[in-house]
Length: 150
Image 1 (tube, one colour):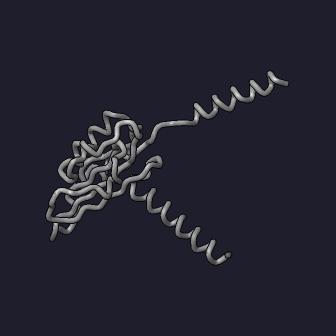
Image 2 (cartoon, one colour):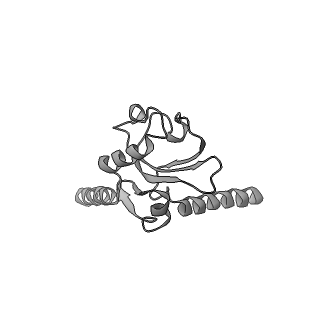
Image 3 (cartoon, helix red, strand yellow):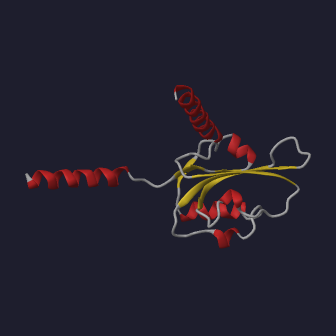
């Protein structure tokens, strides 16, 4: 009996270790790349691709380096910028980034003449607009149905 329990525990630990994985995010830089060929390019978050995303976000965020938490894990990001009076986006950055002391989207921005939008999330591929849109729609639909049933 004890050997069966030990065997079951070993199997559960192996399954848990096998299914645990690092965060996966969409990664692209620039409007054309993010709307084109790199639209679904994914990366498993690590320090190298976090550093690459940080370089691209520094022009938009004050004190980004000081806010990064090196031992708290990663987040997926989706940043877009449209200058005042422009008809379309001029920049888009999606990628992995170390978690920040304050929420990434609440960080102080550098003064810019335009509009920034920010998404920060911690589920696989949550920084792609389509995936986030469907998740939001499902959440809203569930809330509506639960309020009708209740």
